[in-house]
Length: 82
Image 1 (cartoon, one colour):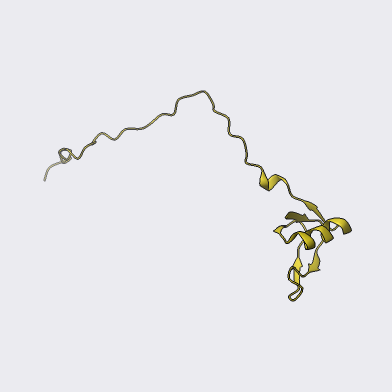
Image 2 (cartoon, helix red, strand yellow; image 1 turned 90 degrees about the vertical axis):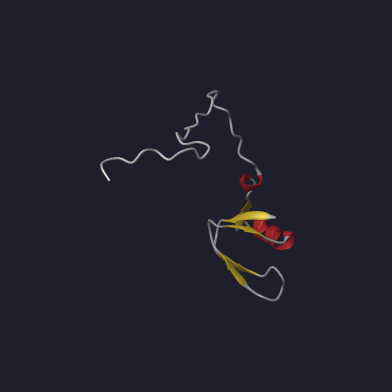
């Protein structure tokens, strides 16, 4: 479960190691630890991350710049005297 911490708090996702979860950071935690942070008011569920942003078409066709030397033809003539 993804949550955003409101307060910096310690927590243990596995019951063995203790980590510090910092305020204003988003974490993907086991549901049991996430629920504890949510129930205590130390975090809120971060649903914004799960949503894919909508991209709207502009209605304009994309423009492409074309290379003058397409296809590997002859090299352009040298500039200046050699």
